[in-house]
Length: 75
Image (cartoon, rainbow, N blue to C red; front, side):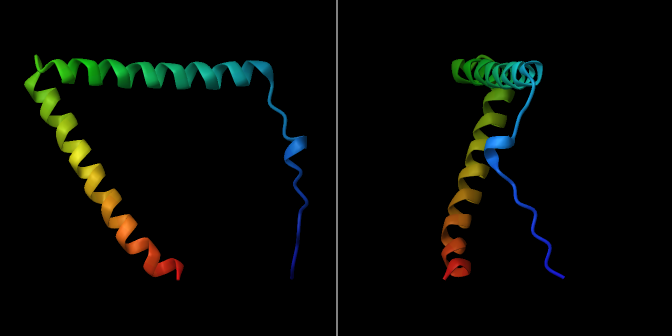
């Protein structure tokens, strides 16, 4: 059975309050990340510095592996 539901992106609507709460959440998340990275970059908190460095290395390693394996599945 093949059921298709037409979805028109022009008909998607969210309320102004919902839009404001999404933007506020995004701004708070970016602000918190910026604050953590600023403290880590100063080097005063060694434990935080190493946690951020370890996560950056981990994300980089995972990203490189994905970029090397992804073409095998696409072709």
